[in-house]
Image (cartoon, rainbow, N blue to C red; front, side, top):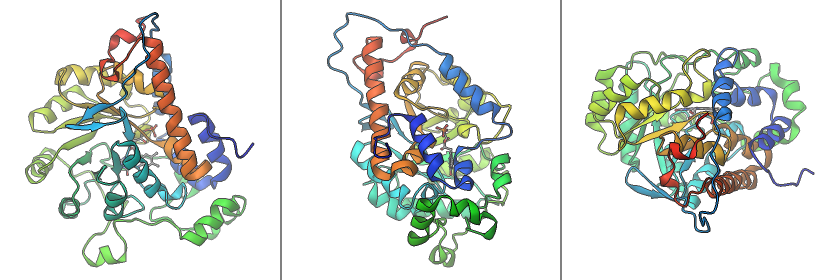
Length: 376
Ligand SMILES: Cc1cc2nc3c(=O)[nH]c(=O)nc-3n(C[C@H](O)[C@H](O)[C@H](O)COP(=O)(O)O)c2cc1C
């Protein structure tokens, strides 16, 4: 039974839960407050129905698309996530290799557990650097210069973390970044020996961009340092120094979207950070059509939060997104069955998307529109 391939996101999550210490599972799985926001977003998505059609000759189906001027073989990529190596040692590089193989973007977090240099190489140029503003912004700009020097072309500025959200499950488990194995968590680790022994042998994950050598070069990150100082002037400054595509992630208000468009962003990513920031906030699926309307039909709009299946991906493309990103399920797939689990889950999303296209009469994913959504 344990050798059975992963079938879907639910399977990945359940099997990850068995393998991971509670501290780690709750960090990945958790959300803000009572997790109402996250559940509601999933409910909205589940409540949407795809309109199936018949007799349309759907033998040839194209899943590839264009994202920021480049071809991507699939309309979904990898959302930036901090500390992925907590799911399993080497997780960041597994994601980078997947991005290279599948020709899709891989968001590499500021607080990734592997350095931007290593991931850039492993992803064969598919990585996008995700930036957090922090403190007075000077360290942030330094990091941008480093990403530019490494060769990163696309920068993703995450704007929905003016303060780190309050996540009760992290607080209960005493989760801290940088991550440490302490006596308090001893039993938790002891009853999950596969994960614990592997992490012990391979080394506990740390912040890949802020190791001892980086610190000597002036790269430091303090998760508790306020990120609340980011403002429009900072955005303008960043726009002025970043020559390539600039994506702004975590936008849920059409007015903010229109302002970003005016000030020169190249794309907007509608996202609630997977519900990790605020419990009672507006849901990203509800915000998506309004954001699309505010920026017009041709401006690139991306989406993440709550996507679990190929059908979910198709639904948000139909609602107006040009590109989608997956988050937690990728980490759960890795925790459950490492790189082969990641591939199995990834293939399941592809298959679901392709079948959903056949069922809705679509031969080109770029043609997804509200036409394929049932209206009532
Ligand atoms: C464990 C974890 C860590 C994350 N770290 C970051 C991060 O460092 N930067 C960022 O922009 N988003 C981060 N996110 C948010 C994701 O990019 C994405 O918005 C979210 O996971 C999408 O929701 P989903 O997990 O429900 O698919 C993180 C999400 C998770 C679950």
